Amino acid sequence: MTPAAGIESGGLAGATPLAPKGRLAENVVHFVRVLRVAGLPVGPARTLAALDAVEAVGLANREDFRAALAAVLVSRHEHLPIFETAFDLFWRNPKLLEKFIASLLPKVFRRGGEPSPDPELPARIAQAMLPPAEPDLPREDDDEIDVDAAFTMSPREVLQHKDFETMTTAELAAVRVLLRKLRLPLPELPTRRTRPSSRGHRVDLRATLRRATGAAGSLSPLAWRMRQRRTPPLVVLCDISGSMDRYARMLLHFLHAITNDRDRVHVLLFGTQLTNITRHLKHRDVDVALSKVSSAVSDWAGGTRIGACLEEFNRRWSRRLLGQNAVVLLITDGLDAEGGAGLATQAERLHKSCRRLVWLNPLLRYEGFEARPAGIKAMLPHVDDFLPVHNFESLTQLAAALERPQARGRILAKHVQH
Picture 1 (cartoon, helix red, strand yellow):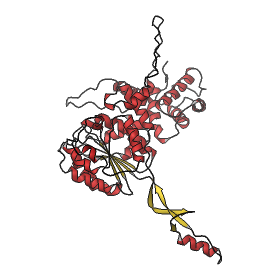
Picture 2 (picture 1 turned 45 degrees about the vertical axis):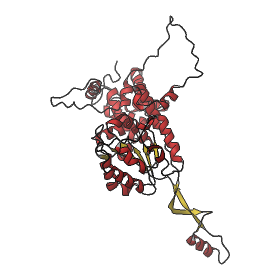
Picture 3 (picture 1 turned 60 degrees about the horizontal axis):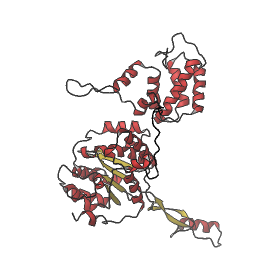
Picture 4 (picture 1 turned 135 degrees about the horizontal axis):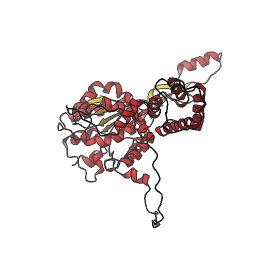
C-alpha cells in the first residue's frame, strides 16, 4: 500500500473524517521521518501533533489535510518549500512524481543540442525519499582481523587534510557538513561612534551638565563616553572560472554559512563578469540558496577576466561595500586570460580602498609554488596576506590568520623574489 493510497487531488473519494489508525498513522509517521531526514526540526512531539491534526480535520479534503500537517510540522518560512515538495512527492502527486523519476534518468537533449529542463528538486528530498541502506553484516565465513589503530588517523582528520579536488562524492558530502558549521571570527575594531561608559577618554558634556543641574549646586561626577567596537564588514570576491570550479563549489557552502552567521557579509562571484549573490545566499536553506545562485550566474566554469572584473567592482561596488574598515577575501588562482592587463592598477586601488586584503590561492598547496604567471605577479605586491585554500584545514588556518594583527608586506619577500 502506497503512502497516499486513495488520496485524490480534491480529497478522498467517499471518505469521512477518521482517526489516524492503521496504515494511515504509519504513513503520517513515515512522512514526518522523511521531513526529519530532509532537515526539518521535527521530533516525537511534532509527530504526535501531526496525528492529532489529521484526526481533527479528517481526510475529506486534500488541502485541509495539507494545511493541517503544515501547521504543526513547519515552524520557519524557509522550511515551507521543502515541506511542499516532500508532501507532493510522498502523498502521490502524479505529475511531480514523474518529474522526480525523470530527474534520476540521464538528460535528454533536444534537436538544438540543449538539454531539456529538469525539475529543480532539493537534493535532501531525493535523499530522504530513498530507502535506508542496509548495514553490512559480517559473514560467518569471514576471518576476524584485528587492526591496531594506535597510529592511524580518524576519517575526520583525513578529510581535513585532503584536497577538495581529489575527494570522492561521499567525502565531498561529508566535508560540506563540516563547512556549514565553520565560522569566520573577525576582531572587533573601534568605530567613530561612542557610547556612555563608566570609564573613558572623552567627557560627555551633555550628560555632565544634566547631572550638575539635577545635583542642585553640589559636586557631581563627570560622565564619560568611549568608542564603540564592532566587527568590520566582510567582502568576498570568488573566482568561478574553469580552473577554480571544484574549489568554488565547495567554498559556496562555507560562504553560505558565514553569510547567515553574521551581518554585513557581501559575496560576489566573477569569471568573465561580476555577479553579486549576497541576496541569494541569505536564504537559510543551503539547497535553495545554491539553486538561486546557479540561476543567477551565467559564466560558471568559463574564462577569467580578473582585471576587468576588479575594475567593475572598484567602479560600481567599492564605495558602498568597502567602508568602515572592510576586510576583503580574494579567492582566485590568479590565472588571468588577459595576461594581467591592467590588473596591477585595479589590485592597488582595491588594496587602498579596504582595511585588509587577503588573497586565497589554491595553487599554494604545492611546495614549489613560484609567482611566475603575469596575473599573480601583478596582484601579489598589493595584498596583505597570501594563504592557501584547498582543503578544510586551510579554511581553519584562515580563521586563525584573521584573528592575528595584519602586517602589510610580510608575504612579499617569500614570493615576489621569483
